[in-house]
Image (cartoon, rainbow, N blue to C red; front, side):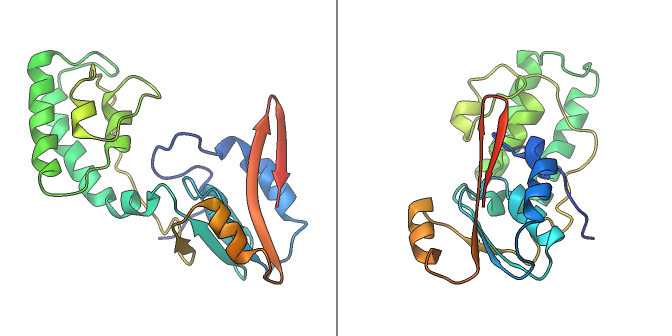
Length: 199
């Protein structure tokens, strides 16, 4: 199923969800069939928004942070969280997880880490204090745990469907596409309380 998102389906530091309403307004002034290049792809929210608002456009998403790998790992992330829930079932939401239970949580996560990719950023939002993220098991085991487990499962819902993925430094991407016809670069920045859109 494909739905319009107002935020990315997974946690991401620096999400642009607070800009989306303004971004959509700015987008109205640009061609329906242009090539849109998301230089600082991040969570892909701008790329997703362009593709939903302008389905005939070609959208190129610079996935410098490997968000695609996290999206593809959603079923595995849901599986890990489902195994943690019985361990923490008697704890109140947002309460500190005692050491005895933390060790059980880490044991489960470690078993997946030994197999392959684990989305530690998403697990961080389920186990660590608000807005604190780690990207490895080594860093995770050093942290104080809290019971922030998400009740519902994470879903992709075709989030970046029909978007072209690339992975490169933004300067290289800009140089590659800057001489193309009908090109629009997506760059969103914020200064103080002002929202600036440079497309």
